[in-house]
Length: 365
Image (cartoon, rainbow, N blue to C red; front, top):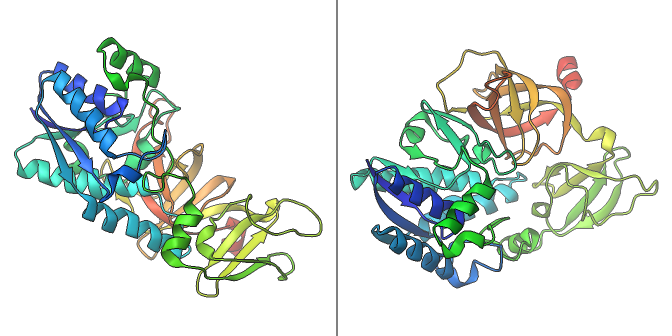
């Protein structure tokens, strides 16, 4: 097959491209330029997509003997990922920019262009598996990225290749070292690539300005502090609240209301939810019959929890959780996995969290 290898300049995409070549595919490498000022995007292990990364990707392509190009997608990335990120926080939600990048950039913009150029598939260094067209978790649970791929459609998955899903990250680095790739020991990028200093609140303040408002204690309704913008908070957050409540018990963010600029906090016993209501779902393996029993992962690094999934009247999903969960933020993705001892790694689909509540409250309404 004619395969386009998305090469970020890191070790994962380098080995994925190499494995595609080893499999006998006709491989072309492409690096995505996602920032108009790429010199600012990498700082140590933070960020990605810098000029340094482009050079690292080109060196690997040269060693593999494959054609290599740089595609400028900075405008598309700004509109679909960065601007979306800012708008979601402004609206009181907590987005996942990696998921949005996979959805809008790597498997829409890149895949569409690849198909137009006659390529059959796009290969990436994601740690996830594809088996008979179905998306599954990586064998390396610590590096599994199926959560941020759960937004992909069956058509997109049919044109994707994830060669690393059947191996551990240690093995990936071993393969890179065996081949003499300079990136074998290169640190992984982490956090948010377009916020290389890791200061999300500072980034949003520069974009949105100061928007002060009250911090309210849910138990008493009393104002216990002030903030500079609701965008500096996420549901479930404990640290950095900037308040001191008399009883000294830890407080968590329970709710964010951007119109009134109110951040509501409360104690641990008020922070749990038993029901999640979502927007419309994207199904990776075909539309299932609802209701169904499944497992749901509610944050990128959260443990899955058993749940009952049913259709909501507004076209979204109602997800009843078997165990109370904290830190479930609107805007995050609820990724569903098959509930089966042997097939629990199978991704069914995902939907964006709209709101949460205690199931007991929902029953009494």
